[in-house]
Image (cartoon, rainbow, N blue to C red; front, side):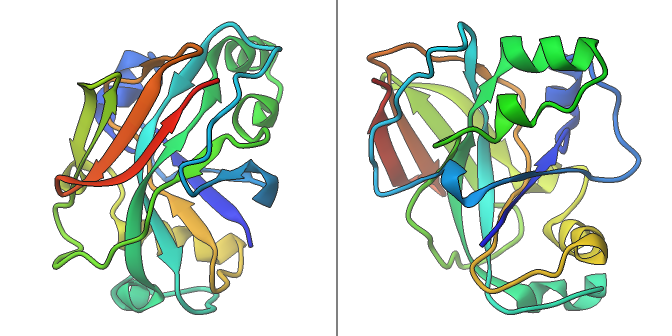
Length: 200
């Protein structure tokens, strides 16, 4: 199982981090050890002082495919959830300034939080949000993505064979921010809570 992540997929988020709007999906991977599920607590790493949440809709791949045509991409996922792409922003900025890869800031253990998967009534215009200590801090709608689910699957499958159980994090809207020890995070898909955990 692999975790495919898409960066800069909402224009307002790209702008808030002063990144250019991409011509193609920005793809990076996380290993299986990045996965955190079942509402288990997240333990704040000792090597960062600026850890950010990034709330995203996550797709679960339901069958194997390679070079998938965009018009057939819907056949490759049936369930979605909301997740958190945790990012050590200070470490990421240091790596980017040196022109180095930044997986250590994105792909570390437990950096890919996922909630319970659902089969929504529609895969178009999915609403999602995240609360930090009871207050909504991030919300989005998948209609605002620069690259749709179908485009992401078609693009990523050119390079990686998609396998049953693979996860695809589809990008975060504006509103990312820092967390600290003691924070409680809740994720919602169409108003239904799909995860709740604490930072320790």
